[in-house]
Image (cartoon, rainbow, N blue to C red):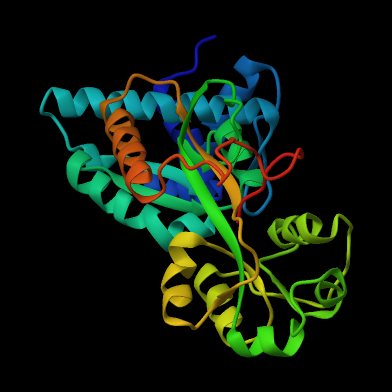
Length: 313
């Protein structure tokens, strides 16, 4: 199947800009020329590649074409850099990362990767239920995810384990848990959740009660504000150890349990021979190992928090 490189570049620009008109402005061609290139690709492929919505959305076939377009862009940029004809920073690397990692260790790792590779990055914040789909669709080249199974066309490497602890403010504990963290107290104590996909708190509840309870809940969809809301007594919640350790040390927070809930983290990236992706992956692995390590529970056995598919926030 013959898909000209300029047509693939046009297709990637449409998706990145969100419209045919935006791609036309970026490429300095007319919207009509953009439409003609897409029609030509669709005729060659034999199916629709992009839905003309606002912003545009790719079809399943369009996701495969977008992935190919991004990979060709990456290869061309790597070759240009190797030959001294261009700068690596000319191509942006889109990465999917969960909010808690962004709030703790990932941004310093990315800053180091930018220095060492010379590349630029676009960070897409999403939990693991979305991150693997971004890899499949071609909108991301790499992702930090809780999913061990590699997305087709990608490699998956375990880079560490995040440890979450149930915490609350001292006043909150005195008010809602005067007799300890019991099933009855957990049923009435207000709980904080990141969003409606956040299941960390329910995991802790099941560990304590062996049952499902439905306490009052507040939703705070920002990692730093989530931690602040816990300190201010809005509710109890699960925080990464990296985020709650200072508060536990100085008394602003109190741990509700002895054992953390473990979240294995995996770095998935395109299976592509690229010096930039190789360099980025090396830095992420090293920084994750330094920040998180590959932790095991206190009894020394490696476990997943639940038998269900893990989720991130």
